[in-house]
Length: 279
Image (cartoon, rainbow, N blue to C red; front, top):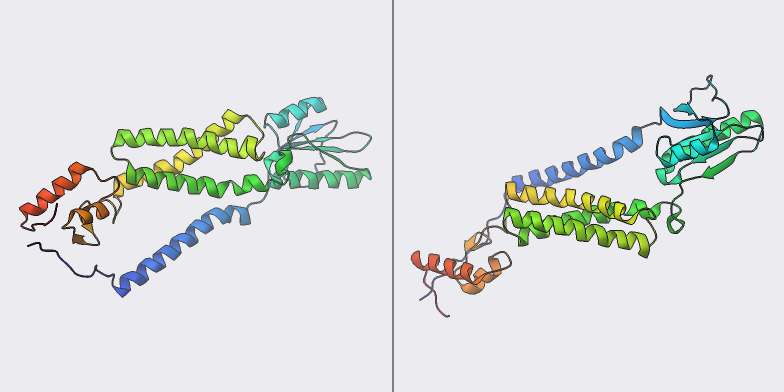
């Protein structure tokens, strides 16, 4: 005759429930503060820019650090090589501002604001030229901004799946490498040729995306290896109670359930005097 332990799963004490709720809310608040504090409190200063045909006014306290270039072409090359964020071309026909829209709105708005001040002092028209623009399909940068969440979520999902379904250090490392390569290439295909959000070098973008997803996934896998996965990594237990039947073992053992795993646990249960009926 088979025996089976029954009973309700242990419940958390009210004090522990309140403590973990407060702890989780505090963690969310700290993470939010860490991400938003630089955005809310930072100001532009010592922004590297180029100047052609003159010097910027020394009387005004400008948040830039200027470097002189002999020609407009040299200034454009410096922007494309990310030596400066923008450049001011000072000429008799009025100032021209060279910006890199792909660097983001923060730096571009500062440089354009200084250009408007120069044009106002010279009583001239201002010309703004974007030498490194965003792609035509994502001219506002909204697509790039929206990419952050799916990349983080994808890294978390990849790390959780590998932690739960892959056993062994070498096999997990191999799974992480394959995940990074496949994920980086596929996401680069979606954001590049398919949607047109990214318009640069395809393999460079795939490498950057893959590395970013690998960083998140490997962190999850490493924490799982270090701390374990409560509720998923204890073979032969479900809800705090021993599983006494093969069906319970299949339900409670982490996927995939191998035949040798079930047979071994059944033998352990027999040795404990639990007994079992059925095949």
